[in-house]
Image (cartoon, rainbow, N blue to C red; front, side):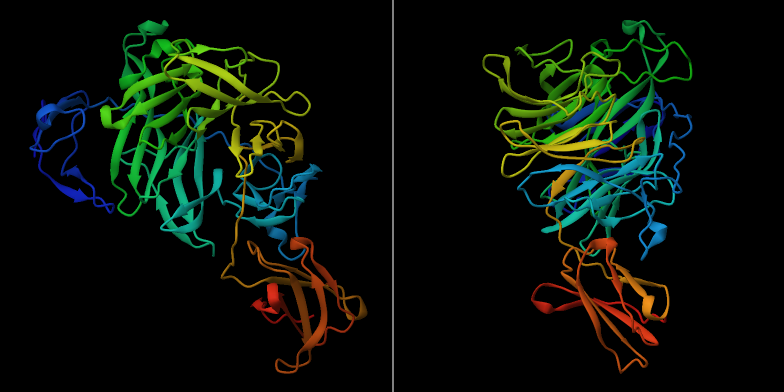
Length: 524
């Protein structure tokens, strides 16, 4: 392989193999020069490079200098849970307004805002807290259950929000809440908050943003302006190598944006704003861009060519009645040629309320028809965020974006579940999925009162298999006897114990009576 920069000259480097065994990345010893053309010559058959040779231009990187936009949160206000067994958690309380849903599984969200601490969180359908991981700084986005190396894992983004995009890292955590991997974007970029999709091959698709010099005259801006490139990367989780990168500026013209270019010199033009990636069965990618109000099928095997555009100003399809959407998020293919879309409809407001859409595309006829539009309770209108999840039984879970509400609908459109975070909070997405976990930490126990009015407060952050709690007390470590056994009520489990003795231990009891864990010895 020969790599030559038009300014920097020949570049030495090494090939580093992917853990998937299907390729490698060339890692140069020294960086290229901004603006130069780099020529690559190989003897390999490379997609989009006839004869194994190709050229690319190195972008002028424009640093994003805006300050993070995390709001100040309060933990001393109504709507914050301070469990007696773990008062420092300070999790926002989830309030359930309706629960007629037959589907099992817990709800996964990542609350942020002004009430309580920010972090990934799991709650039961009744709103009871299962697990909360408050972050010391920054915010969490997109908590989800995925598969990695044949096992269920939790995944989420954590970091700062700068000018509407994330600067941070993607976390993969096991069912014992141990970190399996922390994935960073490659090529000098930061991972963005909008998407992290694991594949069966052990790779992860993520979004990233890069400010670069760009001609903005097509949208009324300067010829030497600044634009934000919406980037899709596939990263090998085991090695951290970038296996694939797609750049919106190379494939989607800025003229497709719904917003004119800014004239302020320190305000990069976010014309595209990538916010979801769905990996299609044939290997193509379905990419959503908020600021063009369009979704794109992209063919990585054809040098990232845009196969078709759905919506926006350059749609490849005739949009049937009710199918037009604005500033959408979370576009997914749930069946061949059937898509779900969260239609924000704002901001600015283009519709009176947001919608969760199911649409069918006909590639041969270049037409789109509306299968169903799910409407929110109370006419909610989200200015950003939001998602639609299709459950195995056909129910749809909808996170209503910048509003604090999330819901579940039957396939026929009936509202069968509704819950909300405190006013002023929201979650980028909400999912409902089965999750089974056993932490390696011990249950936490706090005693209150004294003598005959002693109460044992117990909780086990993240445990899902506890059926009952058994309180043992006595005067010596080896003389403990059972004082009480009660049903698990999550972090709300409090057990009166009129005779606690000098020592107290609490055991978590699972199905069949097995002891899952024991707390430390606690003295009244």
